[in-house]
Image (cartoon, rainbow over all chains, first blue to last red; front, side):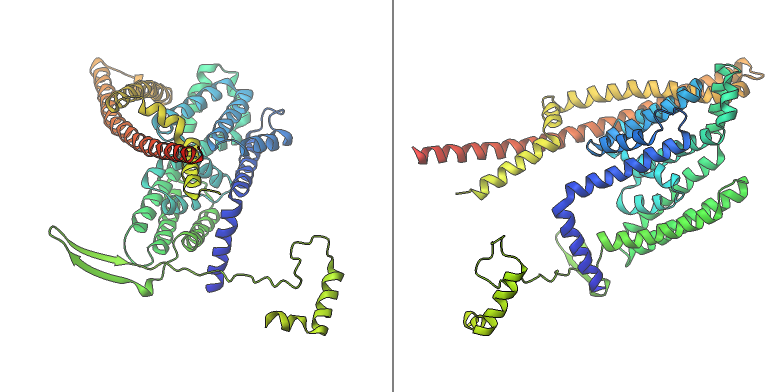
Length: 337
Length: 134
């Protein structure tokens, strides 16, 4: 355990030193995954779905705020949908606009959570979302998570029935609009997942904020179990096509990720918990203090062999020669004395 | 000689300017009530637009079922439900947005106050230094 803690401290130091590059790198990877998934699934416009476009967008978005990535992803989806059919693009644009009106106007800095949620669904690990959001965020994070699920299922639906949607387009714009809206909003699997994720986040967050011992572990496990149960029961009742392997694996992965997050952000020593009681004029206080685990990283000691520490021209032969000479002449002993 | 206190103040001011500066100064140019009510009105207009869009989408979905065999009584009930939902939404968002923007203004004002205090301190330090030089 102490080795792991030392590693954590080292990681923190590395992050503190290179946070700019690490964040940009992560943003680039996220952009690559996101645009790659969009283009791989609904890449109807060939020019926009090329690998150059994917990498180019990821690179550009890595240097801009996260909200730009969200806007670019939305526009990319709409362009692909427009290439397939105008009514689909209209309905999708309206749904995205509704997301903006009812939530993202207030917290534009949290918009990237929609991307994380949709990405997790795209990578077939849906129940990582409730655990991570519940542990790291607040109950309000239910909204971006739900919007991410809706966005993913919309794209997934278009991917699955592109040919049918294209042929429906020939029947007329109105008919196409009605059928697409009905099929997207009437997707029971989507609403089931929205419910599972929302309940999961609320459960994880509620348990995590309790003062019980090992709250983070219990929260991750209970959140994962709740999600797996809701998804499985719903799948049976509604006769859905969600893979049970994906449900169970993502639940387990969520719980494991919860442990990792606890280790990184909330490592405390419950064995040294202090329960204190005191009072003032108005209240009695029952305080539970749990000490954090802190480990100092062993520092490397650099031993200078020569006096000229900053000499860049000295090569290995010189160093070895100096070392052997100082040993022979006993200079090292004299120095230390 | 480097003045650590001055560097600290300058760094804090620079971070603030980068993170919040522009937006905060814009927000704090309003009185709290003005800022809160202006933004609440804007939110209500957006919510109205959103409500009609949402209504349109629902109508696209279930329009045929709703219109089928419609009577005047049923139409009136639908209209009453739609109006009640709209009013509920407007009230919820009105109260929520009012409190949200009011808090946002208070936070921005507090940050601006701290920033101005830092800038004033810096100015004083600069003046003292100039006086010492002369």
